[in-house]
Amino acid sequence: MSDTQAGSVDRRVHVDKQSPKAYRALAGTAEAVREVAAEAGLDRALVELVNLRVSQINGCAYCLDVHTRAALRAGETTRRLGVLAAWRDTQLFTARERAALALAEATTRPADALAQESAYDAARRDLDEDEISAVIWVAITINAFNRVSIMSKHPVRAVPHQ
Image 1 (spheres, one colour):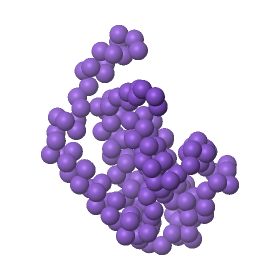
Image 2 (image 1 turned 135 degrees about the vertical axis):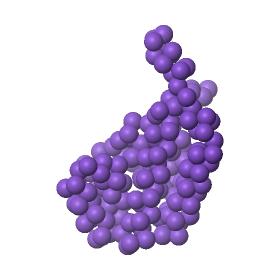
Image 3 (image 1 turned 90 degrees about the vertical axis):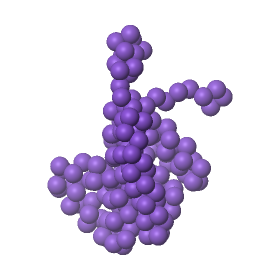
Image 4 (image 1 turned 90 degrees about the horizontal axis):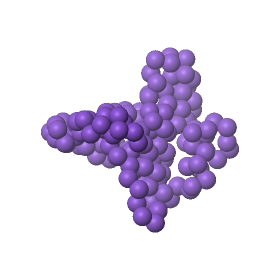
């Protein structure tokens, strides 16, 4: 890292620590969304796939690190995680997972109205209304956490023997 980059990181405000009340509210939202997802029947592995795909789109290294480990704990395979960015080009994901991933992408890129309509149509075929709502809330929440981590420049540090 250059001196300029290091200085830039050092000057960043960690908004989660600077405004803990707001961050606790966001964390509370995340907990409520986890409950909604579980009640809708979304398993933890699918929730983590959504978290990872949104974090890939947003380029959030910190959230990618956190949610890769969470996905592995939830039983996700390294093979599927390795191709997640190109999920449309594989046969490794179920119709339900594909619908959730497309809906998460559309939630992350709301300006693409055509993709949004297409994703919503696919979701209607493969997900019920509770699942659609839960996927959208998972995507909204991870988008918010991505922005907190990106703007704060939360570090991803090397861990010995990993």
